[in-house]
Image 1: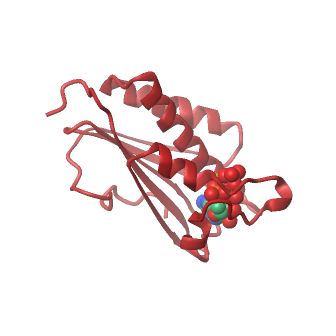
Image 2 (image 1 turned 90 degrees about the vertical axis):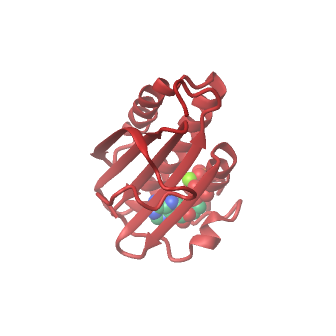
Length: 160
Ligand SMILES: Nc1ncnc2c1ncn2[C@@H]1O[C@H](COP(=O)(O)OP(=O)(O)OP(=O)(O)O)[C@@H](O)[C@H]1O
Ligand SMILES: [Mg+2]
């Protein structure tokens, strides 16, 4: 699931006005790196502190999932691809080439976790859904998972 084009965003086709791609190791110390990198990139849209915090939290949840679930018994790379659109959206894809999810609908159900023993709440996807406007989860067993999220930035500078 790594390296795929940003072509399956929910809603209208994306007309990027800026774009970036990051590839990093599945290490927990990279969770904060990913959060800060996306936050710095999207600051061009002049988000409010609340909007910035919402996106940072959602990115954190998706990256943590890739690291702790996708690569739970292995090690690999996590990719973040992000676009800022002409109409003021930030679009973010978080992908891993890990174990994949057998049942995406079940995984997205609030309080469902495959790791209750690790004191996980099963709320990561629920948080992403709450803080972003759109959430799409695509996964294939043995191939990996791609989470695509989108949020409109209310006063995006220069938005059409
Ligand atoms: N990238 C992924 N690869 C494989 N499985 C995943 C991935 N992301 C999520 N999952 C599966 O979906 C379940 C639900 O994820 P979610 O983030 O909602 O909860 P959690 O990670 O278990 O707990 P929390 O996020 O509250 O700590 C996980 O327990 C895991 O089984
Ligand atoms: Mg989680």
